[in-house]
Amino acid sequence: MWDDRNAILLSSFYLIIVRQWGAIVDRDQKWYEDQFWHWMDVLTVEETFDEKWRRMSAGYIPRARMERDIKYGNGANEVFDLFIPDDGESVPVLIFVHGGYWTWMDKDTYAFSLEPIRSAGALVASVNYTLCPHNTISGIVDQVRRACIFIYENVGAYNGDQNNIHITGHSAGGHLTAMMAATDWRELNPDLPIDLLKSAIPSSGLFDMNNMRLTPQLNEHLKLDREEADANSPLFLAPAYDMPISVVVGAEETEGFLLESKNFSKAWSDRVTNLRYMEVPRVHHFSLIENMLTPGDPFTCLLLEHLGLDGP
Image (cartoon, rainbow, N blue to C red; front, side):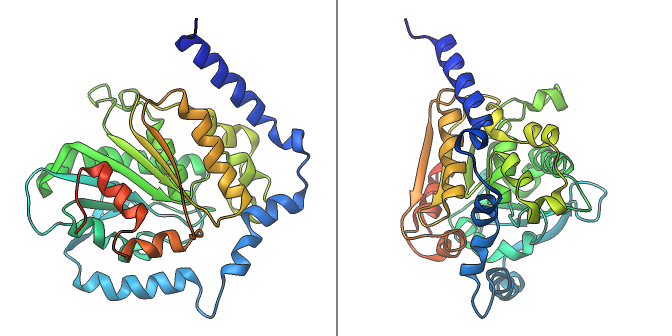
């Protein structure tokens, strides 16, 4: 008879296979570099995407309804911005974690993309963290955890619903989103609920940090060894509880990025009742974020669905 024990055994067997995947398919160095580094070359035009996003956000931030640089810790980068809806009490909360391969970009880079979520009625908290090599991956995970706890404990002062907090993030932020979904908050503070986060939506995420470890241009700054890579790979972890999870990736991303999301979805599918995998058609790594401003955008609509909101 099929039961939870069989599902766990099958999932564990799958993770063992995935851990050895590189040896099975005999991936060479060029594969890692093409999938996780050189792919950015073909997406670079006269203005790089991070430069374009900073320009768009620089035009948006001065007119945004927001509160800037709220401290969640004592470090210089331990701050977040709050994008505040026009009205409402006990509104749903979305925590957003920025990307940039853990080494560049920040909350300001992505600010422009969060307006549709704010204007639909959510309180959006966009989190900063200290970048590598001035930090470690474990250190970043710790910072984002502390940011989530601070937001949970203080969001009521901004008319946010403490019992309706969700999390999303892009690229490296997708990895950090999954790490938060795997966090048992009671281990950090027994007074915290295990369901501090009601759902998670990682987008274009990276879930096996060994692939980053084996990409030299990345690991020069991340400085991952096998132990830290495994400990910070959501692929090898489990959700803290049975929360809704939607895994989003652009259909035109590299094979490596697509495999990251597919393998992660498979690994967690036996442990989560409501797990969805979405490949957004005609979208690559960066246009996934830019398209959030387009009415009817699938990713934006999915985020609003998790929050229980209609489009603006």
